[in-house]
Length: 503
Ligand code: 5AD
Ligand code: SF4
Image (cartoon, rainbow, N blue to C red; front, top):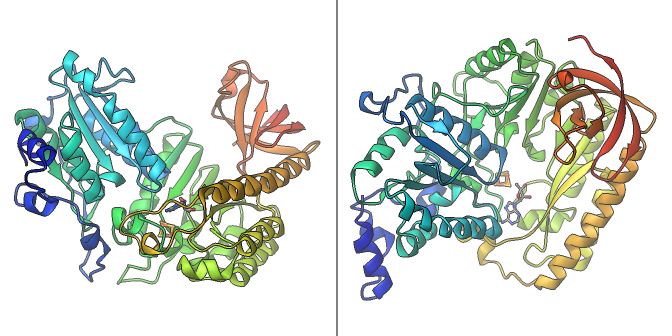
């Protein structure tokens, strides 16, 4: 722990430029350098998570609020933290004025994501005047970066606690420390911890559920901070995953999203068995739940066995998110993606041959250091060749501590923006054409709720993940129906109800 006041005065006055290392004796600070190390230590799976006795009732009459940024992994971590809060007696709120604890579950993937958090954190200061007992906390990927912790120490003295992605199970203890001391509580383990199986979860919604199958990433793509913020690859035991999915099926969930930063590496860390994502999905297929999706795939580890299993269909839907990042083999090499354009296209051909109705989506980064116009053109041609159903497109954002951050970032901002626009224009045209091809055809739709824009209309997704709007009775929310598509736009389609599918 560190005295917030002391830290802020020291660092603000500039008299002594104390680094995080100077404070390390007071608290557990993050280090991206340590996070990079990959050791041989065994990962133990724990089934004995408990809330300390004195914290079990601490939240009675109090409210918590978690602001979540970034990927589905963060959304799912938020569900775990919500579960822990509720096990301590807290009630959820959306109102910052009512909240007694506010957590920012942050994302570090691009600079923009971080700026957003700092902006909103600044808005929280006034809340402390209304409620001096308010606990303000920062967690998630940003808290794994020493530069972020230093910035918070310097300029955000209203923050009471910072904890890392490997410290979520420590939330009750850290909260207690933050409540009963005037000091900022900081606990960020740079190296991954063990797998904690039995933490409580409060899931958002009762139709779709996230199920984590592994943690971390060992790929170290040169632009990416995730292997540093999420630690080494650790897979959950298949029997634990299967038990969780069975329980969700029993509870009536209709769709599972299997989650991991690099799900194709699932099982590589098992020493006692040879077992991969294909094997796991083959087991999940047998569970009586209508739909199973997974994300995110890395093309390098996408093996033939997995394709074979996916081709069996059933509850394994025809949708694969397969980030390409670039269409240029030279850029891919600099990104350390460990595949070429040819290898990627071969994989796409195999997938399309095995699963004819497959819908593919991708992530693309433009403006990577040194990317030439010709190399960018190769990305455009890849998009046209694959014909993705949708694409998430990003401007390269240097992340301190990653290898790409020390490459010369020589693509002018204007050029990056222009490439992004051109990329999006190509993809939008393909998306619209593919949606138009759906018109007149009938699809199975899982109705997920009211349309965000018009509560008179319901919204759902096909097996391939297409958004469909349909006029139907609200009692159909959470059920599978058949719709015939009547109209298509770039990002959505409209349909008419045919029949209800019995499941
Ligand atoms: N800059 C821009 N985009 C990035 N991504 C990851 N790191 C960066 C970065 N430094 C993108 C990749 C990844 C997606 C989740 O975010 O495309 O697949
Ligand atoms: Fe980042 Fe690459 Fe790992 Fe994906 S596979 S999380 S892009 S390092």
